[in-house]
Length: 318
Image (cartoon, rainbow, N blue to C red; front, top):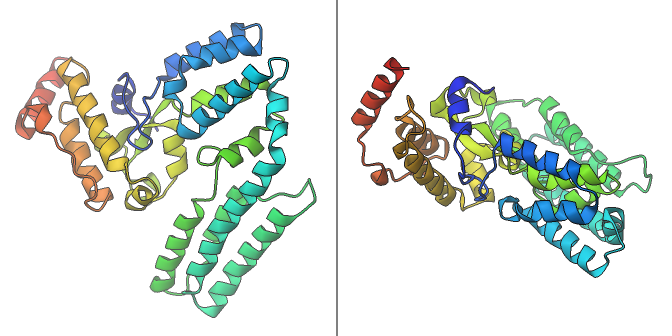
């Protein structure tokens, strides 16, 4: 849900993603990129357009873009189909191992459950392994199906509910095209050229994230909103922020970079009517990260009381 207050955040430009550290692009800029790609006459022209945004690409996408560029420079007569087919088998095997690694961790955690519940879970993970190892090209493992199956397993007591919650969070780290190069290569092999090129940059579009997920009672207010890249938003899913930081320890640093940029934007006249946002999001991030994110607002130069007063005045003059 993108409310009016969320829109104020999305109007900001050249802001760092607090989850991935890249400079995000706006939805309007993404529309311009797509228009330019559609007007190109060949793949080389399209790659030239994207090259201007390489610094905005996420880590996985940037790596894929560099590999495509090198491949085309060395093989100018080739296309994206040739690029993806070249290492398909290698990436397929690597992806399977990445999936097994997560499922192994799930099974290890499952030993803390009762025998009956553990058997229910083992049934699902065994099915996953069979799908991953299947040689039938029409049968394949789907991350979403496994996550849904885990939601259906019912705990026998509060202790089991905590363990199952931890297991579901572990399962969320199954590779996706936004977190794994191999998952990207397998997912987009055989896709249309325009779709692949669009995917290289769409993950960097700024979106509104609920710091405390709505599924956990998070509210639709600016105090719970964070401007996050599309990839960062999707890959976090409903993982508690404190656990998500374990996946990327740089998040506290990126959050500080972003709030400094937002403060600078406020000083330049942006975010009118939301001058208290730095104080609100500081509190939310501290609580949801279990104290691991403590923003330094000394660069704001405006006390919390002064920020709220400015906010009230600006709202009255709207």
